[in-house]
Image 1: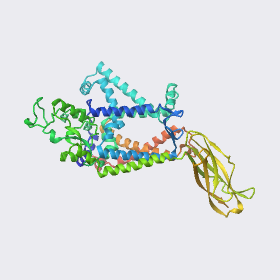
Image 2: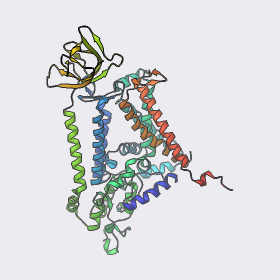
Image 3: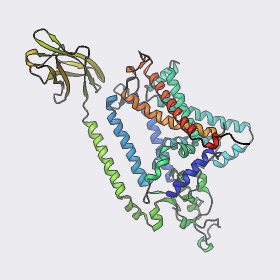
Image 4: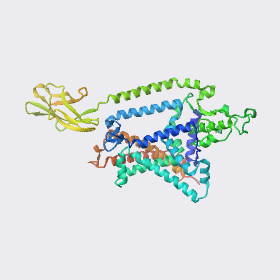
Length: 469
Length: 84
Ligand code: SF4
Ligand code: SF4
């Protein structure tokens, strides 16, 4: 890996200035290609579909910026819940670490939006322009009616898909039905338009134009993946010992008797590579682990009658020491992986536990600064507070408010039961009174208590300061 | 546009885009746009507008920083007048 990282610097530096050679990836079929298409379907069905799913009379998943609330199925998250968001981020980062240590850039090859959209865009390209050889010929051709229509049809399809992606994206922040209604009645706000075009434009640029350059020059993950690799990490490897010396041969002839390895030097592994590299030169940082070259080479091996797996998932140690599958698997469970997994499990359990025990009520005390403390009738001292009550659930809730912590302390101006509307916060000014003769001058601690009427075990206490002058 | 310009633009605009995204999330998680004041008056834009303007402002700021980094990284050969 060390070498890969060294060349990586040079390459990145050079290629930033070098004129880019357009990569024309050839379409592949095979187990890994099928797996990638399965991932394309799953992720995109979720992405394009989820915003249409209703739940409790609203969109099931909606990051409602206008209301500053995140709706995720039955949950409503508020800015106060940033804790959950940060745990989620930690879980994602840790999973990425774990997966990368086990099997390299699985994320890149199968789940990254960059890969997924490039795959879809390539499919459209192939649909209109044909596969690799045809596309290269078409690009080299003089302008003609046929070329014009193929190219424009492709661009129209790309633009339509990009716009729909932009609309869907914005539909997670403003209800999608409102957006469609706004589009059809031409009343959509300017900023919504802006973000639709922005996200759509980005999709087009990344998946249609920049493609592998995003992985090579813009992706932060591609830059630091090397630190997560070790000699027992599964990566796409060309079995040099078995393949070399490469060279073409007559069909059916025995390569060994001609002093040849298994590689027929057909170059198909290079043609299918979306980043345009030659995996036979060893692991390079450009390799996104898509396994297209495995699928391609396996087909070639089937054709020439050699065993599959000249290019395969293997580890540095396995290649060096000629391990079989079982030895490789044994080394998956190394200390590093075990530690990652244990930490990940702990964080996940914490997350689920925190989510399950999340209280659906919240109480914040804001002291009214203008009136600190004053004498009220009947020999009482009075302090005024503004309480912020929050009902996080999506149904009404009756609550009772009480105050404790000082002898004779009482609340004034609060109903016996307060009905809190669903998923709202409300501010409530309250007066707290304490008999004057009970108290010394200075500040005293009191507690506000909010109790759900339907569930007395649901109790929140929030402390506050009572001042006597 | 020359490749040189293009690579410069990416180096300026892209990292600042990522950082602006993070800044946006952190900032607006802790601060409600309706509690913001602009030149002494409460902000009266729609929420979407405030978030969008916030993001673009963050992006511009970060891009300015990236551009400054690039500017100061010029080698002496690039700064000194070239003898011809
Ligand atoms: S070398 Fe193979 S696995 Fe790596 S990016 Fe190219 S085709 Fe995909
Ligand atoms: S696809 Fe396989 S046989 Fe063909 S050049 Fe690549 S490694 Fe050699």
